[in-house]
Image: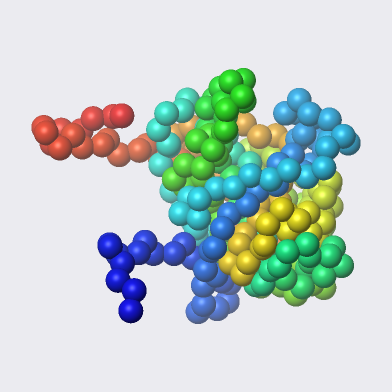
Length: 246
C-alpha cells in the first residue's frame, strides 16, 4: 500500500447542471487568439497562424454560478476574457477532427483572467508568461451542461457585461478553429484525457476590471455566470500577527 508523505490536495470539480454529479478536472488548456477580431486587437494577424495553446494549473479553477474573485497580487491590470469551455469525457492522441466531438462531455461559460501587465513584461523579455495566466482563481467557470455531438453549441451569441454594460460580444461561430478542430489540434501535441477542459477562445473587447466590478457572462445555451471582483484579504505576518499587504 502506498503511503503519501502528506494528504493529497482535493481535486477541482465543476458542478453539472440538473445532476447530483460533478465534473472532475484533470488539466486546464486554453487556445489563444481564436477569434479574428480579438487577435487583431492583440496586434496579431489571425490568418497567418495555426492554433496555439497554453495551460493553467488545475487548482486555478474557481467554479459556480455566482462567484467572488479576490483581486490577485502583483498586478495593476487584471483583464477578463469570456469563453465557452468544453470538458472531455475521454481523450486520446492525434484525434481525427471527425471524431473529436465524441470525446466531449459538456460545456460551460468561463472567464479566463490575465494579469496583463505581467504577461506583457514577460513577452518583452522573451520569458514564459505562466505567472500572467496561471494564478489562483484565473480559470473561472460556471456550471457545466452535458451535451452530445449533435447538441453541442457551435453558434450563438456569447457576451460579457461589466457593471451592466456590454464589454465583450461575439458569436461562437466566429471561432477561427471550431471545437472539433481545436480538440484535434491539441491532441497532436499530447494525449488528452477524461477531465481535461479547454477554454476555446475569447471575442474582442477584453479589458481591465477592478475591485467592486461585477461581471455577467451569458450565452443562450449555457448557464449564466456571475463574478464579483473583491479585495484580497490582507496577509498576516506571523511575527506580528498584523495585516500586511504583500
